Length: 172
Figure 1 (tube, helix red, strand yellow):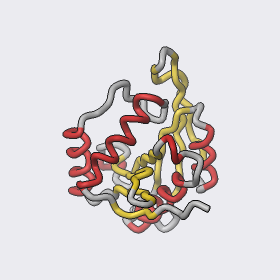
Figure 2 (spheres, helix red, strand yellow; figure 1 turned 135 degrees about the vertical axis):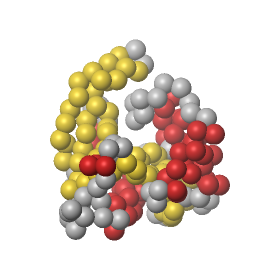
Figure 3 (cartoon, helix red, strand yellow; figure 1 turned 30 degrees about the vertical axis):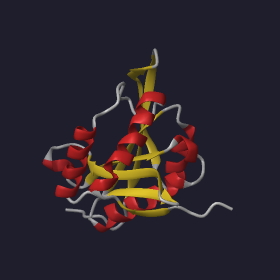
Figure 4 (cartoon, one colour; figure 1 turned 45 degrees about the vertical axis):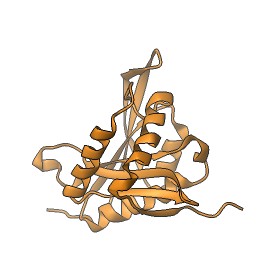
């Protein structure tokens, strides 16, 4: 039996592994609508911005191998959205379907709740039934379906928004 992954806060030294996982998804899946790999410099900037603003980045690893990551940050930049966050979760191709998405989402939800967030939002490709199912199993509900808003691999893509209301979050 495979041991469960260790999930921990990521460090700046983990960014190359985070980048590798993200770029694999960007190049080979519709989990990201990026069409080209992102650079290490841009991902380091992304990480430093998360740290500066107190937003978490979590890492799942097993036997020293990084298998996935999760994070959240602002949903929109306007002040009225201050209590709404958008999250991301990515798992390596070899580790998908092993429960890592759930292991990475739980600390994101807990952190957001403890930080006083009121809502977590996720954008998921409409054909990604596994991700949608994971989110629903964690209490998210589908709140929007945007038709043909992305284009990748020579076809139009639909985007689904899922939302979780965080009980106990700040209510100004």
